Image (cartoon, rainbow, N blue to C red; front, side, top):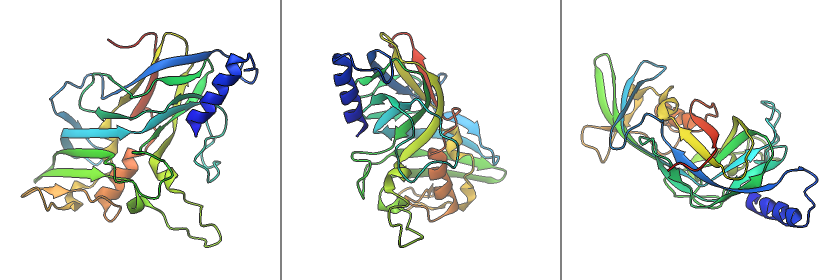
Length: 266
């Protein structure tokens, strides 16, 4: 949908009709990576807001697409649509699988397109295909590690998909589309302050610490595949699993940080 919008804008630009933005069209590479100090093949350690000492040995995130918007919505004012208000000024309609334990930038599978227009918010699509598909078996997050607090020490693993297992039933039968599945798959709005320009690149850094901040690891269920270990459920049926999914969708820039580079990383 938004890729089509960019294509229309490009056509207008070719005709000299981009008066709505007054900006040149831009193509750019986009990259995603873990924290800058994250080293390949090394675990990431941190302490959560609940006081758990966590060591992550696996954390792979699948991103289906990324977008930048000229507006920053007022919290609570959004309609039920998954489309942000304002003007989408940049589109990256390709996927990437990011090892967030590695700080080395990895390229998205598609070139980004946009205009030289200031963006104030960004969003990520956590989807394996159509963001509106009723079901999606794509593993969005695969993670493993260990957690310790006082006398409790445990190993854990988890997989997150976003399909019917995350659908929110309509509370009002007269409004069956009030909670579209796309809302569960889109992380938005992420604060940014970026103006794309020719010759630059977009970088997304991901810090997984916030995903686990509100997780009570002591409430994890025993794993059926990891002997002696524990596992997150791939739904919202318990506190750790619900809060991991909620953490995955938080929009603060400490977790998902977009920056504009003057050139592509080597």
